[in-house]
Image (tube, rainbow, N blue to C red; front, side, top):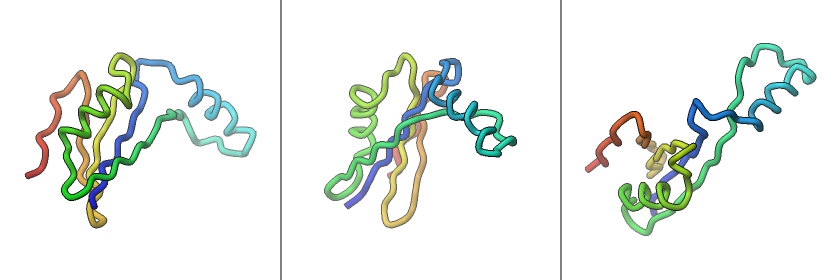
Length: 98
């Protein structure tokens, strides 16, 4: 069984009020060397057999992420190895591993 991990993050130009709240609270905990915090989501999709990156990309694009304000990355996690792939408006998606 193979797993595809989808990490969804707000695009860099979108304000992140949750991240800002965490960053503002850190000095009260004695943490003064953090300059920025961004909050995102991690979704794990398990496939029977081989992971289907194209299907995972469709799921992420149509259901898990809002492409107007969010980017996502896909990672294949099979037997402890991780292959990362980004999907962003600024760059072309990488090809799925053979």
